[in-house]
Image (cartoon, rainbow, N blue to C red; front, side, top):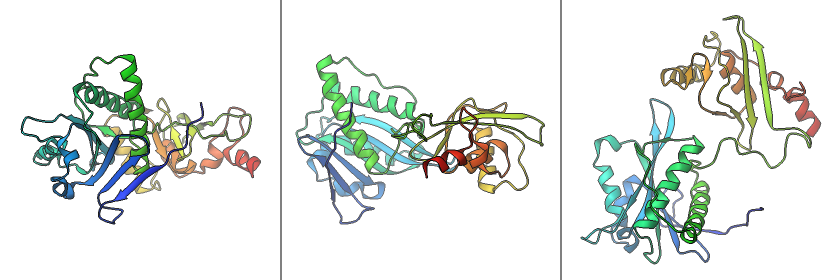
Length: 298
């Protein structure tokens, strides 16, 4: 089914693109705020912040060089406080110094109850883990609660709108890395590409698969990786490979999680441990190089 066009209303609350942003959609009671951590206190007087809601903490794991998120829920408390107070509790947690931005999902009519937020927290956590782009800090999967099929349909519309707005704000936490381009490289061929090459360092044949997407080249899990680095391998790739080995994303020369690269040569160099021309290394199922496929499109 073709997706409908959407008109997102973004209000720059400070007049700054790096400041507080309020997002709404026509004919939707949901409201989403994007707030820098250092400006959370500015929202104390807003009624929506005293309501129940879902929140997303966004930051960076500098050791693993990967984006991080935590997804939580908050209900209105007896003292009248709600989602903002719960987020401020994270700012006092010494283990939560990783996040710099917060996204808050609530409603204009305070319609989120315990059932709604339990389902939404579970759904967002599940989708973030499936996408595999961010480290999801939630230690346990939230309980989805019990919802009727009518309520589930209603809540899934909230999920759909929220994913779209969060993505528009620049956070691709829910975007699958292997979402395909709207058209294949040619009319009749898949976006999958294959690499098979023997390396001199270990005398080993490296075989790998990647998928071309709108963002670049996603090397798929199960691809083989040459463990030994060439002296001329760029320092950034050396560091990336070392970090992935240390975190066991690369085990025994096999990649366990998808990795996204902006260019075919960078993807091939990551796998082979040396500088190389990815446009000739990557081939389709018929043996045609990426260079040849791109020339067919020109």
